[in-house]
Amino acid sequence: MKLNTNSNAYIIIYSAILVVIVAFLLAFVYQALKPMQDANVALDIKKQILYSLNIRGLDGAEAEAKYAAVVKSEEQANDQLYYVCDIDGQKKYVFPLKGMGLWGGISAFISVDDDLNTIYGAYFNHESETAGLGAEIKDSQAWQEKFKGKKIFSEDGQVAIGVVKKVENPASEVDCVTGATLTSNGVSDMLRDGLKQYITNLKED
Image 1 (cartoon, rainbow, N blue to C red):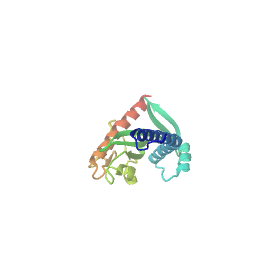
Image 2 (cartoon, rainbow, N blue to C red):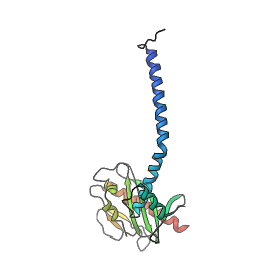
Image 3 (cartoon, rainbow, N blue to C red):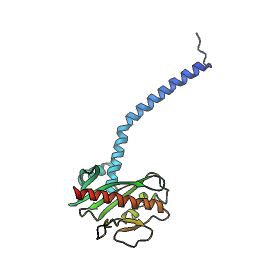
Image 4 (cartoon, rainbow, N blue to C red):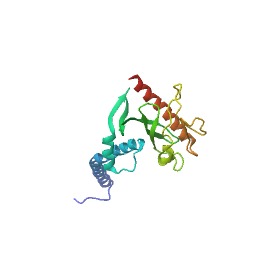
């Protein structure tokens, strides 16, 4: 019996078989590549942590080795993950932070001296901020470096760190990104809320 390749039944069956084959191939490729993708994600996180410790410009193998050398442990305070590091014999804490920018999520790794008040370094990231504006929180290393040495708390113990249009307290404040007020506000809120929570939890432990 000759198949009628123009019949509706043939077309439906043929299409269904193709869909199953393609779905199987996609699932196979996904499973085959997943370990590599997971490794790349893990390496990217390690590099971001190193960036917050002012360690940049390393390739994959170098970053892995440096991370192993400086990150001494991963700890938790009230279910919040943070990293304890050693830079030239000095203890540093790295805190992962998350917040909201203009168009989506923003994040950061902030390293803090052992006094739990002085920022050692900062690295910011984003999901979908505007190129040349809000995206500068990630793209501008010079802007990130403005956070070095900033104090998180004022002398009376209030949270003072912030990103502002006009700096009035240079010990704790950084100029906002030009043309990206809402993204800058999101960064400021993320820093204030996140760092206060981490440091409060650490001091209570």
